Image (cartoon, rainbow, N blue to C red; front, side, top):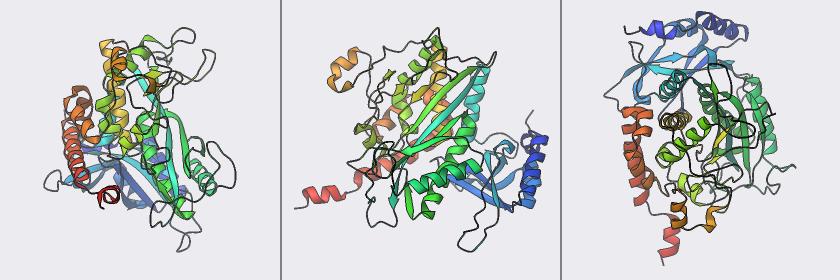
Length: 456
């Protein structure tokens, strides 16, 4: 029987009532109903808080072209369905330009049809579906995230940073330190578990870490964290830049995903083997992600700029390899011991901040599950720099290269049934259409570099 929208939205009446009580006691006046477009951009409908009881029960009807790639002639009426467990209340801002701003909160939303069924083009629903497949197989998927980004002066005539010589994990009076600290405190006040933050290698480059949590919760948080970073940077006279490769001579920025897998039956770590070894399930998950790594790139590295990061070195992966030590591998097993309380993690290093976090985690998990279903074994780990190997040697070792351009990624994606199935036909077709147009536009563009090199 098809669920009604009311049945789909009223998932937990007690939790919904707790949301109403919390927002009322905090003096919340405005609530942002946040959702994601296919590109990973945060979208929101802002409602007055007195509408919250109705919206928690019935959802909120909106123009669906915001998530359909702009196809206004179809899917015009869709519904935002708030997840009561995602409530975040923003800190008060008494120093706002017009004085004290209204207290506001945020709820992450899935997108549904009137009959209560998930909309096929909703990235959050895509991840929910793949997570359900993992649970059906007996596993819970949790992740931690490292977000890398740059803080630039604003407003720049060109991309320029202030002098910032402190370097990797550096401390000192660098310009971005105050913005970094402000961001951490803001996120903590909103209820997010921040694992830490530090200066990265590039000038003005920062990293902010989110502690492990259920994958859906982390994807919700990534959308919000990006917005908070931008807002706080602006407050400090800076501009946040999430491009994978914003500066030619400086390191790129990634979104590293630390994946955990727990058995639902007993809560045990499914990735941990005997002693300090990883389990057969871990090896199969690695094999699945390596096998589909090239096709995943269209999702986790979705822009023309993404491939300049992958081609440039600076600990960015260029091959589908795994290792325990080497940070230029696609998948790394961070150090751990059997005596430690922390679980085994599979660090996926290809994603960048242009990726839609819901879709990125969905394809990563789907490929891991595919490896677990087939029982495949990965090639031997390569704990060394691959620069010394030529293509023939890499081929003998079972190593494949990741795509070097967005065009290459499009070609591989079209042929990969596992990655496409994870996204579904609607999202896959929309993604190909949008990225093909982007690739054509990029190839036709005459850059300043070409003008300078060939114009005389």
